[in-house]
Length: 184
Image (cartoon, helix red, strand yellow):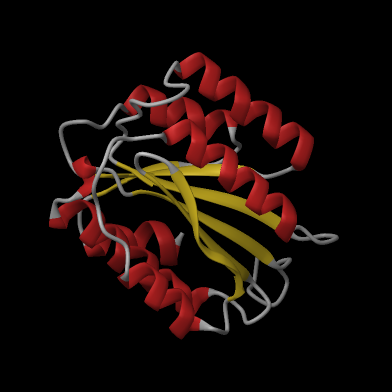
């Protein structure tokens, strides 16, 4: 829809900050990619950032998109290290998205990862059924952005995005990030 016609967006960036994301083509590219999208948001849109490594944490509480400096500062401060508690991060992201929802608004979680879930519920069927349940209960959609090579589990990424009524995309360059996060 045209920018003026679309409902307000609530975006939760769920970002993998485990040790496997340390490569500049992973976390570094991820930060640049999400920063590209910020000018496309309207002032009333909201952004929150949840990270997960050994445990999950809320790095940026729901913040109006107009406050770009605060959002960019939170992105800049992200560092990689630790194991991957993906399921715990997913639960916190859904809780955060639920607090952001208003009447007629659209909530979406953007899971950005190299695909390596190794702590918590790592069973793909358990994850996909959880995502489907949250989509039905809360109306929150999930899209998956893959970064880096080697660990990425394409089948799990696709299944999570399908059950979350979202898209799965692989981002390996800034031009691909622009295509996925800005143009599309």
